Image 1 (cartoon, helix red, strand yellow):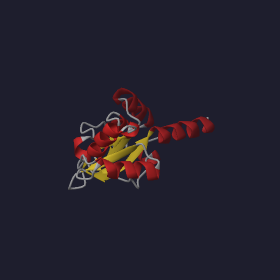
Image 2: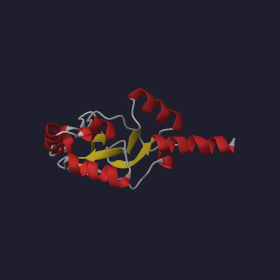
Image 3: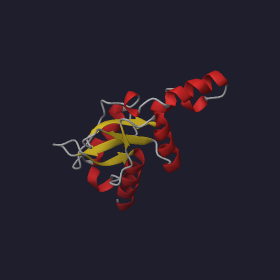
Image 4: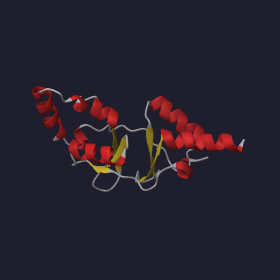
Amino acid sequence: MRADEIMTADVITLKTDQTLADAIEVLSERGFRHLPVLGDAGQLVGMLSDRDLRSLGIGSAIDTPTLRKAQEQLRTSVAATMQADVAKVTPDTELNELIDTMLEAGVGALPVVDEDSDALLGIVSYVDVLRAVRDEAARA
């Protein structure tokens, strides 16, 4: 089983000039945990995850100073917070290599990109991998 067989092709993305407030809105409305970030030419430049946001302490705005800090951070651009050095795969990446890459990189989702242009083709999350493994086990 390959990446292009289990990936989500209709990917919701962010642009580098969008804010963390934009990212939080998409993450919460869609129930996502990972968002690919695209450059001006549509190429993958990074990934933003709920873990990146939690590392800023955004979810714990309780008192006024913390709330003010969170509001300031929410105006920060996605580009300033995303992970730029991203583990990624190509459409022909096999399932076992997808799993190895996720484990080695410590990530829950991998962007699937065109090998030549780095254009985003889809995304494979740990949920996609679990579904694929379940389906393979059911066939065995």
